[in-house]
Image (cartoon, rainbow, N blue to C red; front, side, top):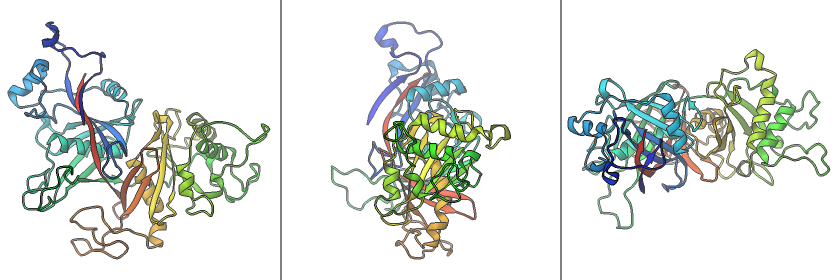
Length: 471
């Protein structure tokens, strides 16, 4: 784990002690900053999706472990150290955007406490920025925000047995962090700390890591996609001019997803039909997030849909052009919901998804968002708020619900495949495994709560870096 200071205004950070200079009254504000890997594979840092997390002064309280060196404390630090209360301070949107661009993560979460002068509530205000724009929902950065609060020693609500360590009674403990958001309402992250072992672990082993359960609003892809991407009535038809065949925009989209390099047939003739067309189940859309969903039929005789998704090598420019081609025909009729994509249209990301051929109960996907400055997002929580309700019907009809319950010591546990009961005697909803097939990989479990129209997304996290940002 590394610890360093990031200066967003100039590349070199000087302290009073090292230079002997009298700094002007606008001394830099120091903000506690983390980079956290969310939805990690096997608990390993360097997998999953990295997110920046910036804790504003209303969240942090300096202790012996996190106070800045005395020689580099600013006047704001000193005020905080003497009074024990965070100084009134917030970042404007332009400063947040600059800091997100400097951190260069797919998303950066900005966290501050609710209430006057921060208060002591476990409810926080949360906003997410990519390097180029603010976004209405980001699952992995929300999970990362909770992990940063745990690492910082900020307690959540409902903590038992002393909070972050799992308690002294040998029992698992939980803590809940609530986040107020502008576009997605109240989001909750429940952190489950495993029970400590009765015998001390070997010196080479680390303590069991907590799991994070993120409660997201369901975002089923039930809106009509841009008209140029209408669902073909006959997926086997390969004639673009046929009324039952795919449109030119559909073909352009699938070709852009398949290969990074443009190019046609051997002699510069019309390129062959994309392979994805043979497995295409349909193209759907969630207008609220601006996510376009390309769903493939599971299975495959020679190459499975899972392998096809893993082998995609999209051309970001061609992807934007294909979506623009599809949107041009509906731009005047407002076919979307005023999305936030950089193209000015309704689409801001493309999900390609199917079910794994290996076990039939694992959702596999990849997520591409060049409209938000993200060629590919390695592991995307918000995308699973879309694909979980999309595949729920198939998985339930097959009886493929996994009731392993990635939670420790709570409802939803028990063996896989059978019926389990929650603490109140009701049948616990099934969890399904999910994998994002990016180069870094991502592992999580999802549960679709149809009656509440919520999706539970569960995964692990690892702090990759912590330090201070200067703004």
